[in-house]
Length: 206
Image (cartoon, rainbow, N blue to C red; front, side):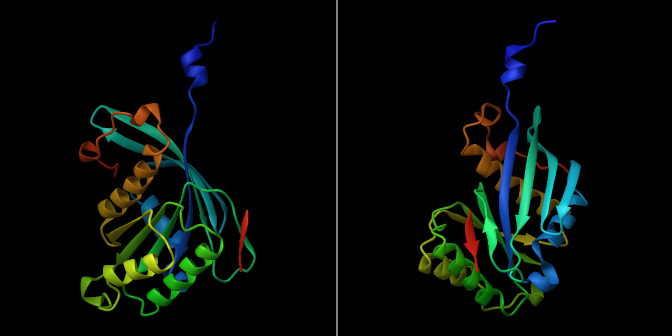
């Protein structure tokens, strides 16, 4: 039987992100990922260790098309020194809007990335909360942008996510993934319209 050249040449669709959290002790990134797993269409989940997970996630492009994306997340822990940061598609910072030290922790993360000359890399800041009335007033999007500008970040997006809303969690994760995949000029996404998208329920940091 002859091989199908088109099938043989088709490459896997992959997405790789390095994660940070401004409240690592109580709400680290991997805890948030687990919330995502509870509702999203994922398979082949491989928990390499407490900071690294790989899995396949089905992304719905429109009503007629979906794609399987191989996703890898690696979380940088502030508790571990000398962590190597590999090449990645983007950075994601989960910012706890209910944690009083979030702006201070964000400052530390951005400073480290700037020191590594990573401030031109795609960056997503996901502001999350559990209860609207517990959001700390001083943690505003304006103050977050001030920090991003101070450290020379220009290629960034800021999202807000309710941790008690599974659909919102999936939508946020999928939007980040699709936005990043669009920069790779993939044939599967050449006609992608964000309005049609729906979600399915070596440097050293010291």
